[in-house]
Length: 389
Image 1 (cartoon, rainbow, N blue to C red):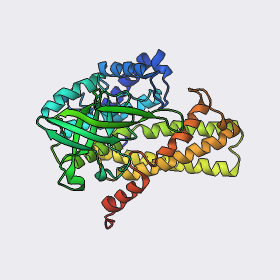
Image 2 (cartoon, rainbow, N blue to C red):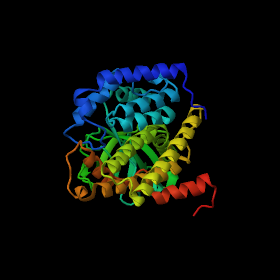
Image 3 (tube, one colour):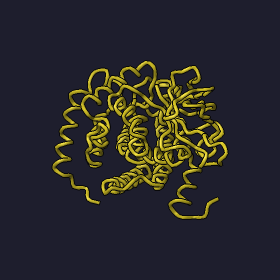
Image 4 (cartoon, one colour):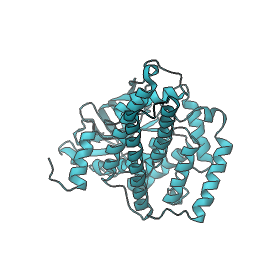
């Protein structure tokens, strides 16, 4: 792995840093780095997304023919680093720019690309992901939501759950059964469905931290046009796996930096409270630091593969397994360091509140984006080549 920075990357870093220093101010700065999004600040997040779009910071690696800047993966990493170091807010357009956009570029028709990519880059349309269901979370081959073609219109019936930001989105990409005579993977298609219609109902769900980030989405005769299938009928599994590959690939390159900043705050709190000399606390801090370094080097190895033209593969499940358990343990350490203060909710924007949110929200890490059990199966079968169950 060659970590030396090119002159182009250094120049790009100065450009990013200068722009963030000028624009990340006022209400944008007040958003902080919290993952908690709600109706009270959504309009500010949308405004920030549009600010990024006007400056050309969205779709950095997308080909210029699709409206992107077509920068290198190295430069995309530079942006992610500088954005994180500047305490840039959580992105409202993640599902559109990070997941659907690359999926459409890879699998979408020219008409779909022309219709949906420009509004994503301008921050004008927002998306959510309709994969998981009450009876089919990580086992996506078992989804039961159906879509039946009636003339030039799909009619969709079923339910999705754990659908992040559905209450704010205009569109949802839905994995559903269209080839009803087929079984498992071969029955699936990947549909683009408008949310604002009588056949779609969105119900926010409150999580342990009191936020309604997740939603249930009900389809009762929801409609979308026949040409809204991405990747072709019966190819939904391949298309969805492509989306998940982008989710576990470059879309989370800045995650380790956020974890590093959080760990630094944990270590500082332990020192301020005089707990850094406690043998148990020292051992937990040492483990957290060592595993943070493992994530950093593993992430750099993945980035090197992307720079050389590689694509996200099943190895992404190893990283998902690792960071989800690591962050849960860090949240437990944060709660223990807070002591009795952890029992009373603190104001949003305080370090204590952020630690409480990590402790509570991290319970979901081993479930969402592929449960721990499913990730282990993927690693065993697709990385290690072990026999299928």
